[in-house]
Amino acid sequence: QVQVVESGGGLVQAGGSLRLSCAASGSIFSINDMGWYRQAPGKQRELVARITSGGTTNYSDSVKGRFTISRNNAKNTVYLQMNSLKPEDTAVYYCNARYISYAINSWGQGTQVTVSS
Image (cartoon, rainbow, N blue to C red; front, side):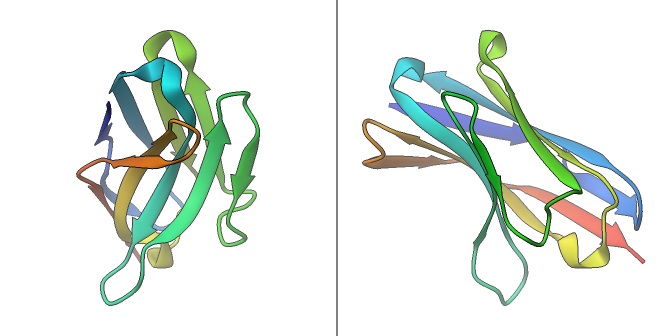
């Protein structure tokens, strides 16, 4: 099994920056990719960014050019650097790990990001 734990959320003014961290533990060798999703009140959970075990990244159109996903393999940690934050980025952000040939998902508990205007 794989477990993931997020940290780093908070309150920031529009135009500011935050960095989220996601630490993975357990069967690390079986992880295929990790990503960040977010869910705003009354909306469905949506993909923000993903990074594969080989380092390939992809982003939602709404965050391209503002957010950067990266990983530190030595620390089994994935980061989401969020710059130029907008009020519409306000949501609970969830870390996700897919493993064993993408068959299993592990989710973190979520961390709140609030961007004030």
